[in-house]
Length: 87
Image (cartoon, rainbow, N blue to C red; front, side):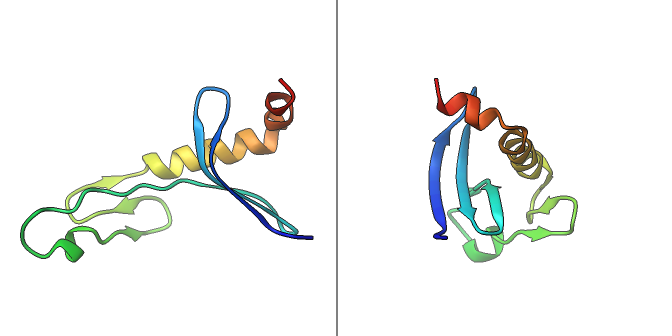
């Protein structure tokens, strides 16, 4: 079975950035790109650490992209995607 990669898939009231469909299952992925500063060490400003619960950027901490990806995965898992696709 081939693996299919879909980007910017419209859903009910949101878009799913990435959907990967393959033999191991269906996966949702969320892409976030914080803006880099215009001065100083731009690479250091763009670094992110995932600690298992949240994303830690040099100047802030967030769970929003993780929460969003979990909600998208739940939507895919619920079968809503099948009902949405046949509209």
